[in-house]
Image (cartoon, rainbow, N blue to C red; front, top):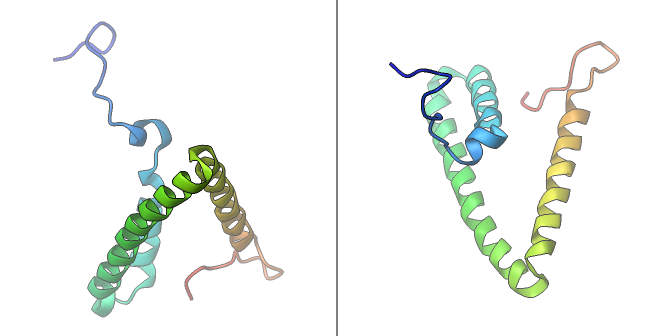
Length: 107
């Protein structure tokens, strides 16, 4: 049994341990599961995974070209700006409407 005070530190799992990047995916997948009819859920999740992975692959190519043309610092600034834009869009979509209900991304 490991002593939590004097034992070795727990294993580090990269950015997941620092940023908690899987949290958004878990929330999104839970929402997708709750909103998708059971008879099409497999197709919806498969399609979502294809789109997600394709987007990741395409973004690597775009980031590479942008880094070559404009420099890596510009790519980080652009990524930060896109992240802020996504956060703003999410906050605006989740604001309560006049009826008191929050906005829904899936109808």
